[in-house]
Length: 363
Image (cartoon, rainbow, N blue to C red; front, side, top):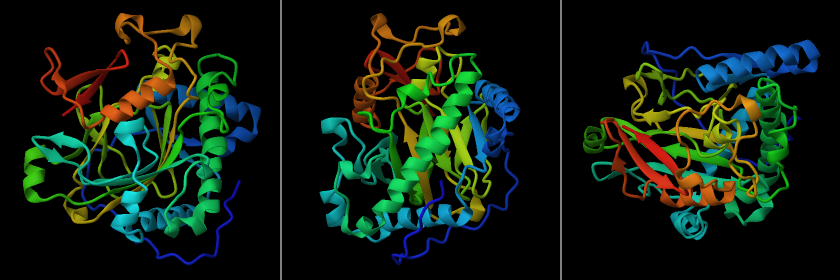
């Protein structure tokens, strides 16, 4: 489903130039969704997606149905949500993050505590998959039809195919996970525009150049539309942080907590963080366009995997199994605002318990 690009004028977003340093990149699988058109291609992709997500929890997707021009248009719109909206209007459309456990709306800079008294320099604007759920700033209103098409595309043409492939990789009925992710259901899958601003030298020093601590996402699948600033890293099994390479017009897909719970640990949420870019890209902002997918609010975060459950560690305290609504609200309210405890025998890990779930953060 191609987007219908509106002719409403908007300033072009000019991204940072490509990184010039040689970085220690992780080698991720590249999944070509155009192969879904044949039965044999689907089975091949299911095996490839299963193996990639079990080994690393991240992969690339290409031929996802949007042209480079359409993707760039979404980055233009994303940038306008920050650069073309006044601070007063941003305050008027601020998300009720702590009050309602919802990210819908703006999250201002310096809202999350990172480390050593330093707060984030990240601004976000979060839009429910149904853009009509809430009002939006005047600047964005002409572009809401495009954002709605983009949301539907991300949900039906990216999320659902990936969920089907993940399910086939477990030898489960193909719609098992798709049926838990309805577009019109009550829930909070959303489009996120996210802009990272450069830090001061003092902030860099105090946080060891970490912009966003190592964490797992709370939802099922996160879709990142690849952009050129090198900053995203994943934690390898040997404890080393590896960089994610930018591939123009590719998607970077990762597993979150909810899918780990629903798959009984067959797929594991991947630990990732955001750090200061290398010297060739210092001083540039990092603009992100995402689709954060979560199961419907009424879905209990319990394994649908039957005999394939592989969990060996305890995931819930006192056998509490929260719904997606309970977990997302608690996790949203607490993130970056709660007091963390240092994990036993792990100097680089801090923990908190949210709705009976032990949530870990990595330095």
